[in-house]
Amino acid sequence: MKKNWYLFFVNASVTLLLGGSGELLSKVRLTDLGDVYLPGSHDFMEQAKKLGLIATGSEVPLAVEARQLLAGRGLKARVVSLPSWELFDAQPQAYRDSVLPPSILARVAVEAGVPMGWEKYAGPFGAVVGIENRFGASAPLKVVMEKYGFTAANVAAKAVEVVEGLPARLAALGLKGA
Image 1 (cartoon, rainbow, N blue to C red):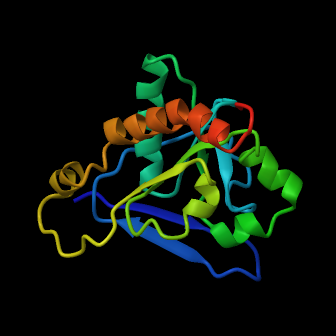
Image 2: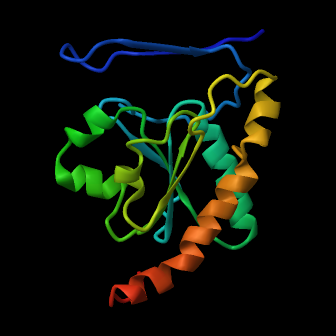
C-alpha cells in the first residue's frame, strides 16, 4: 500500500512532525507554497469573500473537492490548510485575519477525528464536519467515511447550509448580513 509521508521543520523551538497515512490519499500539490508551515496555516485556494473551508492533513483534499462541488453551484470557497493551531495562534492578529478574515462568517472546519476545538476556527456562525464518538468501526476507509457522512458532498452540503442560514442567524441577533 502506498504511504504518504510529510516531513517538515518549523523552527528550533517546535518539535519536528513526521506524519503519515496508511491510506491512499489525494495529493494537493502547488508550485510555490513558501514557508507553509512556519505560520501554522496557509490559504491556498481562491480568495473567496463569503465562505471558508478549513482543513488539515488528509482532510485538505476533501475540502478541495467540496470547493469544486460548491463552485459548480456558483458558490466560491476559500480553502485554508491549518495543520497547527498552536503555530497559527502564535502569529500576529493581522496574519491570522488575512488567513481567516473576520468578515468571512460562513466557515466549515473539516476534521476526520474528534471535532472538539475546531469550533474556535469555524466561528459562532460556522460548522464543523467531523466524526465524533465513533471509534471502533472496521471497514475500508472509504466505506467508513461514507457511512459517517465524511464526504465532499456532505462538506459541500454543510457549507451551503451555513451560507444559506447565515442571514437568519444574523438577523436574530439584530446584525446585518455579511
